[in-house]
Image (cartoon, rainbow, N blue to C red):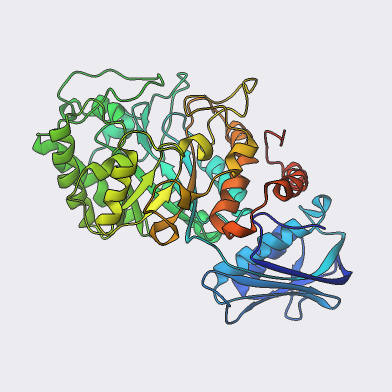
Length: 467
C-alpha cells in the first residue's frame, strides 16, 4: 500500500483505484490550486478533478484528503492546510509521475490529518558556507514535501556575516568575504532576503533569522574591530567558542539595537533567533549581563525571541522566550536545567538533540561529508528512534513548541551536499514533529522510506540512501 511521510493521523482505504490522467484539472482555493497544477503538470479549472476546498477542519492545522472513484477532494480551514494535503497527494502518486502526471493509479482512500506540533523546522547554516538565493529556494521546496513549516537561517558566525545591514555596511563589505575552505563567501542583500522570505511564504514556510550573539561573532569584529576587546583576524576554520563581543561597551548595544531593528523590519514571521550558544570566551557575569541587555533590546521590536538552551542560564529573559535544546538525548551537564529555565519564564522549547536531529553528522564511518562530534555517526534508524517529550523530565508535549533538524555547513559546499546529508534523515524528524507518537513504527517507516527515496530521485533531490 502506498502511503506518505509523515504518517497521517488516520487513513481508511476502500476497494479499487482512481486513474488520474493528464487531462485532469485542479480547482478550488486559488492559491493552492495554482501551486498544485504547477507541481503536477495539470491545468486549473472551475470544474476540477482535484478540488481543493476551504472548509471546516477537524483539527487545528489539519486537512482531509479523499480519493474516490469520481475524483479527489481536499478540505482544510486554511490555504496552508490545503497545501499540506497536496504534499500527501504528491507522495501517493507513483514516483515516475512526480514531475508531471500522465496516467497514475491512485488508491481509494480517505486521510484525516493534523500535526502533533505547531513548529516543524529545518535549519540551514549559510554562515560557514554561503548558499545563494536559488539554493535556499531549492531547500525550501525540499522541506515543504515533508510538511515542515519553518526554515531557520543561521545568518552570522565566525566565518562570515551573510545579511546586509544599512547602518553597519562593513558587516558585508568586510565580514562576508570569508567562509570555510576559502571560496570567497557571499551575502544576501535586503532584496535577496525579501525574495527568500516571499518564496518561503508561497510554500507556507516561515523564515526564522538567527543573529548569533555574543559568541560566534568573529566576522562582525573583523568588520568593526571596536566590537571586540581583543584584536581579531578573518577566520575560515571550524573550531568554535573563541570569539566574543565587547560586553561592557555601549557600542556593542548600539550595534545589537541597529541589527535587530533592521532584521525585524525585514522579517514578517513572529520569531527572531539570538543564538547565545558556545560563548566560551565570555565570562559568566558578562554573558548574563549581555543576555539581559540584548534580549531586552530585541524584545522591543515585537518578535518572539528564540535562543539556544545556554541562554537559559539567564533568569531575566523576556517572558515567552523560546529555548532551543541542542544537547544529546541524554542531556549533558547543565543542559536540562538551562532548558527548563525557559519554561519557568513562560516560554516553550524547540527540540533539536544533536545526536539524533543534527543532519550534518555522518551516516556512518564511510560517509565522506559530515562530522562525528555529536556521538556520531547517526544512522537513519538513529534519527527515528527518539521522542522529544522523553528527553527532559518536565518537558512534555505541552511545553514543546516543536522540533527542528539543524544542518551546520562545515563540510557542505553545495546544496547537493546539504541534500545528501539531510535526506532521508530529515524525513525521520518530520514524522516525529507531525505524527502522533503512538502511530510511529520503525519497521513500517523503513518500508515507506524505501518508496520515498524513489520520489527523491524523481524530483532530483540528492540523498544518502536508507542503508
